[in-house]
Image (cartoon, rainbow, N blue to C red; front, side, top):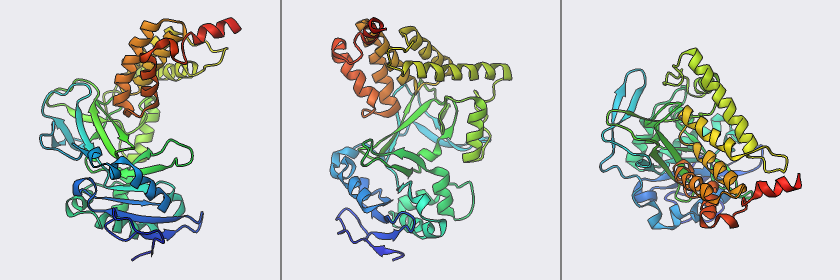
Length: 375
């Protein structure tokens, strides 16, 4: 034991006694929990507060055996893994994929409370991280160790820093916390600022889904974006180099300067329009035409995941002026795109489904017209 055992009674879900360490900064206790049988014996290690661990056990991922059906399964994967010149290992489509087709669905091998990095220094973290990985089942342990690092130093710490994804796990204020997760499968996908696939994390099933954003032909590399794609080329390249140490050479970043400048202008327009359309005050200048322009800009930029928000704006703006059928058209598009973008729990998906039920009872019905009367 490298710390001390949790004073909270061990749950049968955990295959090892929780090992804990207290932060001298905030006084919180962080405990390492491992389940070797989680997700049909794939296993998972979670380093979090005891309270956080209890929240995990309440999730369908642990509580409902059916929540993880068809997860971590690659019987006939729609890809092969290959060496790609200048990019290392990557995934290549081996059949035609259509928008919405599933590429990967996996549970993390390692979850860590993000606040822990501010509370514990590297010297205290390393032994717990090593234990978290070594307690995983043999196949998962090897998959983790096979991941590449970028920064050097302790291998496991380097793998975590290089390959982890930040996730907001709970939306409600009381339990909201950010976590970092490591999934070997997603780490096989290379970056593109204008990718052909997108991922989201199902916080109920603790499952990371990757799906096609557009039609992908056999022989195409499958890519995701590691960053917010709605940024200027300079900002994108700077963020990628700072966090992952590479210079992006995707088709968007490799454009001639005059084409790149036009792209940067569209990105600024997207930001400005989003600000206008988010304003629900009586003085707002937002219109359905603004939302249509926003959709067009996303399409021109080939940003096919966040466009879900633009469709939702269009639905609300048309509904706000009493155009119910046009509102339903864009609400339907928003639901389809939103499910790919963030899954069924995405707030826009829930809101647009309400609009589709009956536009005249949605909060946005004739919203702008009532404001016009007040101005």
